[in-house]
Structures are given as C-alpha cells and as structure tokens.
Amino acid sequence: MTTFKDDFHLAPGHYLLSHSVGRMLKSAEADFQQQFILPWQQLNQEPWQQWLGSIERFTSALAELLSSEARLFCPQTNLSSGLTKWAMSLPESGIRKVRVLMSEQDFPSMGFALQNALDNVEIVYIPESFDMYDLAVWQQYIDEQIDWVFVSHVYSNSGQQAPVAEIIQYAKQQGCRTIIDIAQSLCVLPINLNKWDADCVVGSCVKWSCAGPGAGFMWVNKSILPYCEPKDVGWFSHQNPFEFNIHHFEPNESALRFWGGTPSVAPYIYAGHSLNYFANVGINTVREHNVTLLAKLQKALPEFYYSPIDQSMCSGTAILDFGPYHEQVRSRLKQANIAVDNRRYGIRISPHIYNDQADIEALLHVVN
Image (cartoon, rainbow, N blue to C red; front, side, top):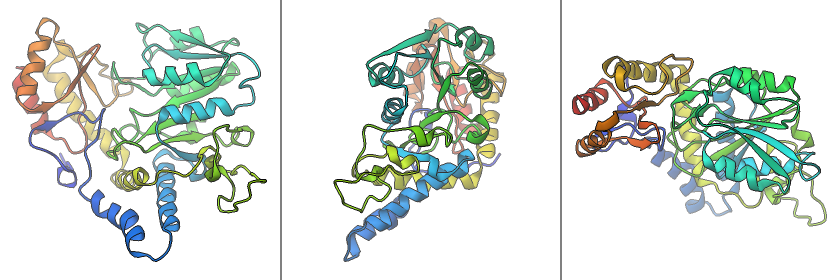
C-alpha cells in the first residue's frame, strides 16, 4: 500500500488526528517563501498583484477539487464568517421570519452563527439521537414551514455521513434553501458541487486539506449569487477594488462580493499549495487509502467500533468506545505517543494519506 509519508512533516509517534489539524507539507515552506515573502521582500513595488494571484490559485484549486467554477468561491477566515455573510445577504433576510433546520450534532459554531445572523430567526433542531444518514429522518422535518436546511456532510462526533444529494433534492421539492458544511469531508471524500446543486457550501482547509487555520471559504450557487446583497462589504467586495471612488460601489459579479475589506493572504497561499497537492494525488486515492486503514480497525476491534462501517455511510474517522476501559485506553495511547482525541461517543481516529499499516498496528498493540 502506497503512502505519502515523505511529503509531510511528521513528528515522532503516530499521528491520527487529521479530522482536527492535518500535517504540514514539507514543500509548503518553500512555496510560501516564493509566493508571499519574495514579492514583498525583493520587488520595488507593492506586492498585491502577486499576492492576489495566490488567491486565484486557491479558488481555482477548490474548483478543481469540488467540480465547480472558481468564480463561485470566496475566501473566508472560517465557516462561521461565510455562513453569517450568506445568511445576511438573502432577499428574505430581515424581511420576514426565517426557520432553519439543523441537527443537534452539527458543530456548535454553525448554530451560534445562524442564531445571531438575523434578528428574526427560529432554529428547528433534529435531536442528537436521530440517525442523520437516514433520509426519512430529514423528510420528517423538512416541509413548507422550513426555509433553510443546514446539513453537515460529515458529523465529526459520530463519524457518519449525511446523504447530502438526496437531502438537497428533497429540500428543493419543498421550496427550501440548502447550506452544506464540508469542513470534515474536504480532501477525504469525493465531492461534486455541480451535482449537489446546493445554495451555499462552507468549508475550511485546516483538517484533511493539511493547510493550517485561516483558509476558510464559501461557495454560492450561481443561480442565487446575483440576488445576494452582502452587508459586510469592503473594497475587495467591489467589481474593481482599485477604482477608489467612495461614491460608487458595484458588487463583484462573482462570489468575491462577499469578501470584504483588506484580505488576509498568507493562509490562502498555504491552502492553495496544499489543495493542488491533493488534486494531483486524487481524492479517490486518498479515500481508498483511508478506507483500507479503517477496515483494519473494523476487523480488529468490531466490539468497540461505534461509527458506521459501510463506505457510503462512514466518514474518514473511526469512533471507538471502550466502555469501562475507555479512560485506561486513552491514557495508554497517550503514553505510547499515539495522537488521537476524544468526543462524546468515543476516541476519534483519522488515518490519512501519510498514515500506514504501522500506525494502525501500533494503536492496536496498545489497545490489545
């Protein structure tokens, strides 16, 4: 089985935390030097032209990975920022009450953002105990009374996927807008935004994309983009940011209308480099490798395996619950320098492209 260990900075021990922070590419530092430092350091001119080229690299890489168009992506510091900007921009926002459906399993920050984005909003929660892979659960809650449906492609605490394409299709039939969170699936699960045809997608590159924090993004469906009127704007939301006429604001025709004031650049340089790396490797290759290592865990520890086993249902993360021995196992893993973490349903383990059989065998040796 081929791995890509030599391409990444890996400290001593066994790192299985890619659902939290992916490891840094060894080539990232030289690329950052070339794309960010040198234009600033050596050119006798402002480096914005070179820096903005790196932003274009970032959105183009996202477009290639996610089967869409670069103009439909806008950099955001994080998912909460993108979600808030999108919610505030819609024609119905501030005009009438908006009812939003989401799960109690969603990442809390998404709920915080939606609760505070609008003055007149009601959140309807699917109870945490419900099976989010079951389309019938979603159909039970989605009706003409729901305006927006928020879906996490992957639920990080359970290691479970949601049937995103089917949910979007059903929500459209009920006249609902759809927002999809791909923070836990980008660069480990294949995604085709054109086929999904959601209204908005938010994500970040800190996890499986191995690009560090700060490089979030939002994607806006081209059918709704012309009707979005962002409230949090700045000169980089302008069709021509360098026009410098305070009396004239023309929203960018692309999703960059959501960008805002003077942007951060450095995180997107790291992210663009890393996204291109995974585009070259191929997400199907990443997923196949991930599933192979998950299967080794499933076979060895069936009685402790909490997360789904079927490939169409499981995320890139295994959840293991050791019952009365749980804290003892956690302590032993820490002593053995095996990097995992723990959430409500158990220990989370995420084998990535830079992991191999030896990493899984080391964990199994400690557990057994």
